[in-house]
Image (cartoon, rainbow, N blue to C red):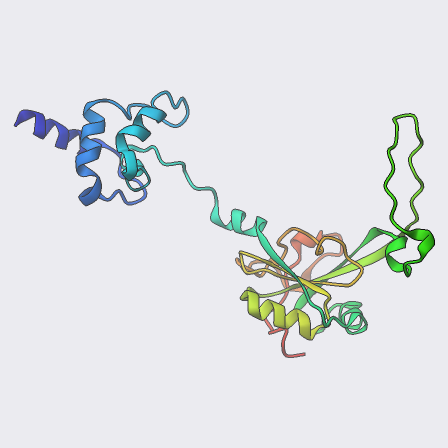
Length: 237
């Protein structure tokens, strides 16, 4: 009987982080604490394997009861690094260029233009003389010449957070060629001269926090990361 009370007492002293489910975990955690299978932390991890084996199939449910669950990273940061991309087959480059060449009067989006190098062969019709041929190259051989040209890529970051469907519709209404939707809700419309679906970084500063200054109060020396725009719906063009 005293052994049972000892087990219960040990369980009560375990830090209950991330909502330890006592109803499910009480028995197995008591056993693992009594056998000292989970008597370490994630830094030295000397008992990680023993703890995993002891908690068995309840590890994911009960690791928080023994403070052995990996701490989650900042959710916003993780979401801002992951994105969904899609080609829009009905892009209208002329319309997108016209809408993004100057700052939007209603501050519905922020346009960013930057240079990118393109392989000019991509923009020339195929001919028999230019068929793709593979050949081996030794270290001594010089690098083959490449015909490249520099183009201006323009992307437009919507001011407000939105769903993926709304992002797609908004970018299509602006004539964008492709779309990148970040999992934090930031929407990026990408022009036809861009490579790899524009900028792989969430820069919609009104989304998700919505903090910053009005565009009229911004200093010209501020970087794009400091810019913040209004809350109008980009659909209302």
